[in-house]
Length: 173
Image (cartoon, rainbow, N blue to C red; front, side):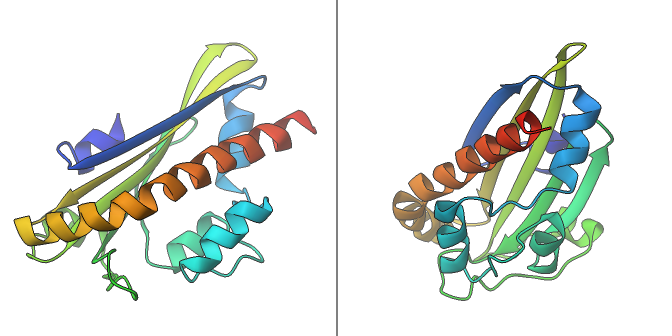
């Protein structure tokens, strides 16, 4: 998987998946153009992190500081982010893909978030989303794990809600 290329080792991982009755090409295209904050709960959680909830899409996430690290059409795309996620501002770093790969400054953490797509049958697709975080020193690891203790469950809710909303959008077609 592409995600392994960008963060093969990590301190925290979270994976969620769903099976959809749709062709992989349709699911991939839906996700690439999806409005992530379709549910009230997801909108609330995004707004708590400072993202406008009117139109949280892949582009909004990229504008907020994520980097599109890599993609293979109809198979996977990977987003990356570097920051001090446990601080109120997040101290997000605006980086290129090359800078993300070489970033190794103590006091920060690197995160990757992917969506992967697996054709199960001609019209059945497994979509998965995986989030990995690597803290770049012991101090940031301690701070992040404390932060994650409180935020992690809500992160999981957001990912499950995104998958549920994608499934609902596919089923409405």
